[in-house]
Amino acid sequence: MANRVVKVNMPKIRELASQKNMSLKQLESASSLSNGAIGKWNKSDARIDKLYRVADALGAKVDELIEKV
Image 1 (cartoon, rainbow, N blue to C red):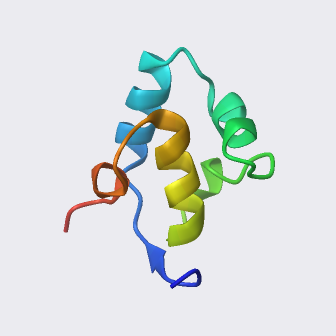
Image 2: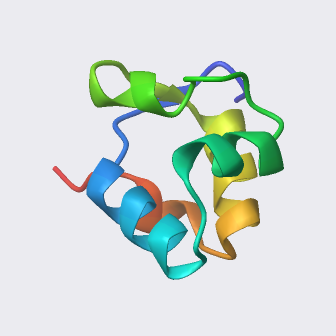
Image 3: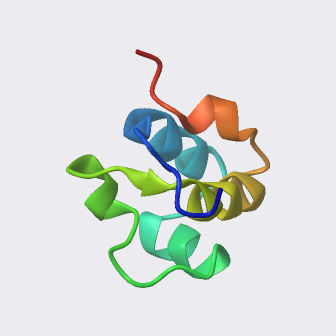
């Protein structure tokens, strides 16, 4: 399951990060992701294991962060 990729709802991630007064860089750090990793999701899919880390740092559910098709 770690290699599964999903489309990410970037506006929702930005909104939730903003509500926690976090920049994307701070969110990456809190999620143990490399610099720029979240920003790359604008153009590519995210691995689900990384999205779980972001959801945890935001206090959100993964379902909230996945783009609905």
